[in-house]
Image (cartoon, rainbow, N blue to C red; front, side, top):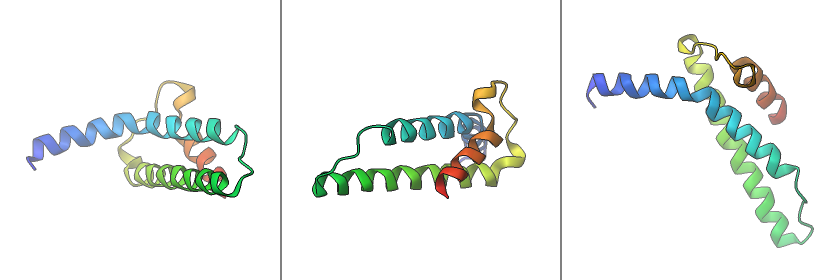
Amino acid sequence: MDPVIFDERRRDLIARLPGMIDGALQRYLDFTRGKVPTEARNFAAYSSACRAAMAHLEQLIKLAQSLSSEITPPVSPNADLDRLIADAEATLE
């Protein structure tokens, strides 16, 4: 890949990452606030979806941690990267 294009995509990812983490966490929390299925088959699908969502969130957090020195803290308090990472890590525990 062209180094210039790579740098542009990297900067774009860094700029979008806090919103991506916030969005993934909010969607996960919204999903888990709903009714939990009681039928075994539906519960298995629900559980699988929760695990997939948490794996996605974990990967976003790891990416943010690896790029943390390059990420400028967001202006919006709702998108504060440190808060998002702490909230997500607490959810994972």
